[in-house]
Amino acid sequence: MAANKTTFKPGEGGRPKGSANKTTIEIKEFLTNFISDNLITIQSDFDQLGSKDRLNFLERLLKIIIPRPQDIKQNEPLREICLPEWFNEEWEEDDESTMS
Image (cartoon, rainbow, N blue to C red; front, side, top):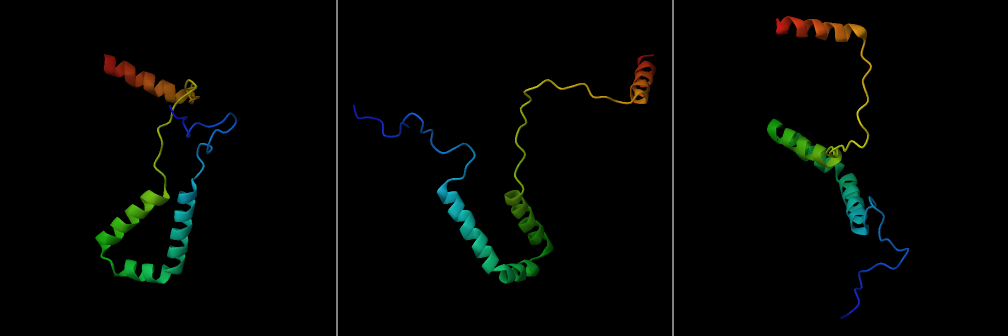
């Protein structure tokens, strides 16, 4: 059987987790240059859109710019929150009145 050519040698773990690959970097650079070179045209086209289309454009753009929140994995137990005494007293009174 032929040796697996994708196996890393000891000490060679591949690309570090979270690092961008070469293609991703090149595409981001191309898009940045394209947008910079065409700002006036893009703004002009945006100004000609109807209000609904402008909102759709902004929504799609924000999805690219602002990353989606990741699921937060809780490794440590939640710590008790220090609340003022009046907060607990108010809830205790409400609980007693609903139980009667």
